[in-house]
Image 1 (tube, each protein chain N blue to C red):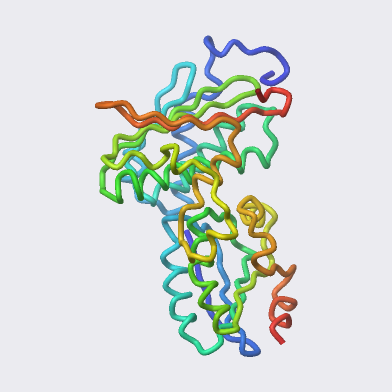
Image 2: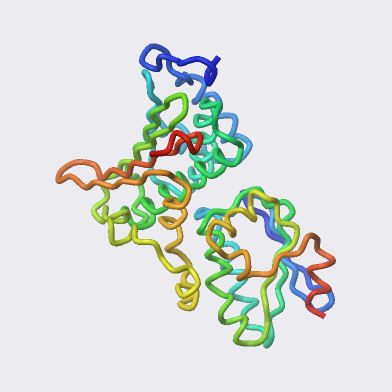
Length: 112
Length: 192
């Protein structure tokens, strides 16, 4: 139901996420994020073009690590969210808590 | 016809149980959900649709898609309304599985859909020992921004349910199911 792919480009950890991110699949994202949080200054871009659905359990994966990431002067940002996925962030009043970019390239260059 | 005329819902179900089962099996195949889990989902209907299933997070996506399919029988709902209702049901079922039943296997959940032309009422029943997950103290709105400072991984489900649904009510009866009732109106005029 969920496929994750991780690569590093221009010193940015890019997580490509595909499928359904709910309480059944959130542990996959959580364990990847937990390993990336250990970096000195984590800069993570979540590319979610093929993410079809997210529940609060999915959003919780990112909220659970964001404080630690920002304390290290890093950040976790999103690119290419479908409107229906972005809506869940909006419903939770998180639209200005995370940075969202329309495509992968803009997301990557935002870290420069 | 539905949505244009005043359908007498006491005579005809808006969606038949057979259609629900067929849709569910198709979706399950695409998602790769185990047959055993799907065969555990029971569907009944007369004028309403009732699902009973084992609380396993693996069926959450099926239940969400079924909810959208069933809610779509009410033509007055917008596409966004349907997505929102699916999210609310996912959140409610997740809470029951993870908190009311504390991830115990083979726990029973019942989901009932009562459909009108402009209104959908959903009842979610469980008999989990910790069945106070939707109790009033949890239903108080949270201040999301200050809550974020605590790095929570959860706790947003009830917040979302209240934001999406027009009426939310919760009852705990001794020796019976805990029952969360959620109502969504198809248009603002219908809201009370």
